[in-house]
Length: 124
Image (cartoon, rainbow, N blue to C red):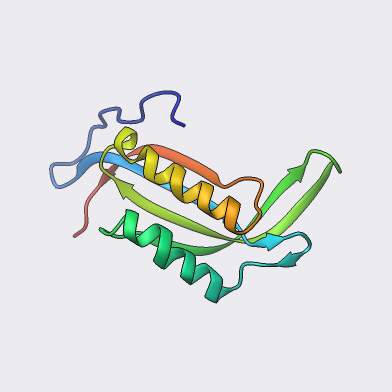
C-alpha cells in the first residue's frame, strides 16, 4: 500500500514525537442513496476500527466528491474522515488494508481514500 516510506524524520519540537498520521476517507452512498447510516457506521467503527486502533482516532463528517470515470461526472456524497496517529506505517499497513477492504465489501464501495503522511504529534 505504501510505495515509499512515510517515516521521514521531521524537525519536531522537543515536546512532540515524529510519527505518521493516516487519514481514511469513507463515502456513505450506496448507489444513489445514503446506504451507510449513522447506526451502520458506528457498528463498523466498533467492529473494525476501534479493535485495530484502540489508542484512539478522530471521526469527522465531511462532504466528498469524485469524478466518475465512466460518466465523466462529479459525484458528491456525505463522507466520514477518520484520522489516526500511527506509530509505524509499515507495521500498521495490514490493519489499514483490513479496515478499508472490510468497508468496501460490507458497503459495496469502489474505494476508500487513504492518505499517510509524516507528522509531529503531541497531546498536551
